[in-house]
Length: 84
Image (tube, rainbow, N blue to C red):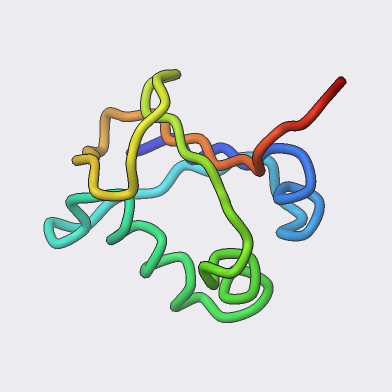
């Protein structure tokens, strides 16, 4: 199972910080995972609608939405962080 982590505003909106998810054979990329999450309906659909930028890290390395994923990965989603 893949470990899916949600941080900051995203965790608050989804009301979940982490979950273990068995990825099906057709869930091969981060984009595929996002589509799977959006198919759950609200609040996932609103949060992952593409209007708000969400960053992703696979196994603690920044990644692109087209990056490959597997059931052994830790996949973390988080909003961009700003500071001063």
